[in-house]
Image (cartoon, rainbow, N blue to C red; front, side, top):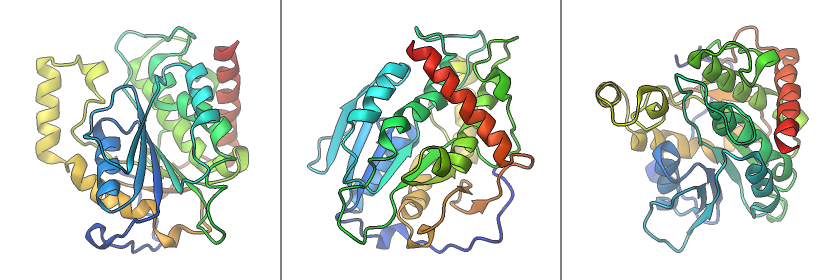
Length: 295
């Protein structure tokens, strides 16, 4: 579930309670709820300027907190956001927005399977106009800008790039696994296909959030019972945020790209069999699907 540890990468980020993020800027796409909200609040508490993107603003106003409203189930909206979001002075962009697939296939108005649209393709779409602009107006000597992509990388999911949109016979788990594989492909090949920043993948594992509500039925007995068990057995969003925020700005990541991290911010290996050729197939399929949605 959390991947195989990569013993070849050694990191020792500063502990969160000693972290000073003054003059650092973080963008969280999906930062108005769940893990994104917890991470944004943790970074804010350590002195960072934080911009959150989502549909509904849920935080208390703060002078260093900015909200941008966007519905990223729409690829047109995602592309627009990627062109217009003010990221030239930002250090890190973190994508946390995600849902789970529904038991019966659902589509957006642009004919993209709903989980694929929200949990992956919107990220790919945003990056079309964002990647080359990220961090370009920071002072000389600033660290390389970074993109962090949340999903479940390193868990052995290979997906099906030939049916990225689940247009064939539909199974919810299979559809969701396509988003998992595509997000891993984005991390592994992003620096080549969407140059500018370095790319990193995050696998938070099971944490109590609303991400499973689509599949389990929001507010249902099954949903409440499942989330209660996860809440008892797993870490809280705040605990995870305390581990991840130092990683986002860790000096040891300078000059690296394509690394994946588990729920304790420890490096893990990419999924076995997920080579560059397979990752490229996913990104080529992503571009084709995005163009289909836009036309």
